[in-house]
Image 1 (tube, helix red, strand yellow):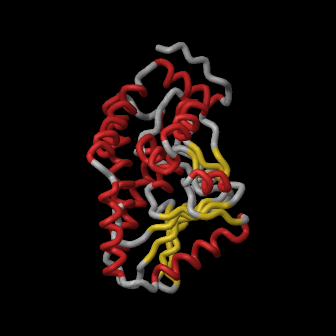
Image 2 (tube, helix red, strand yellow):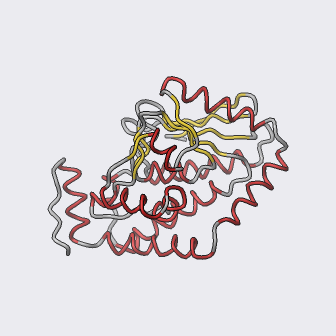
Length: 257
């Protein structure tokens, strides 16, 4: 695989995202996450997965330039649905998945992290969904998962302002489990993973299945509606302006069209 690799230590698969400079969440990277799950699901040497980013970031957002290659709202809706499907598989995966977040988890990067069962963060990490600054909305179930963790009011603030919160704040709001100095983060994440790996794989799988019942039917309806809205918003003039402004590194001028 091109952007995702892993090694196994003491029944823990340590998966590394390596797509410089920002580990942006491209369509190819999402496919590789799914392929990793294919390979690890029945690997008896692996009981827990830890996902982290190489370099400065966990994943600092979606690949915005890739959006310029999408030609229709329908294709954008399909792109969202495909990402949602992979992250839903991640959340219901029969082996625990831990996100170890340093630097930044923004946009699609945070949506990937929210699909994991547990999030450990660096104290100074930045977590957020800044899609509205591009004239877009989250597309990989971020609008549905974020309120589950931080509550509707805080999710609204994060979405409407596009401003991230720190790793320390993420713990306070319930988005992350624990925060550590960046230099200790991966070690602490692996300590947790190895502790969990001592549990019965049968019991872990059952526990993960039970957690899925906390998502009611309206959650899945919301995810489907998000993908549809993702495509609808994409064809607006504001979305085109937001994407172009991002590429040109200027402030967008939204007109409401």
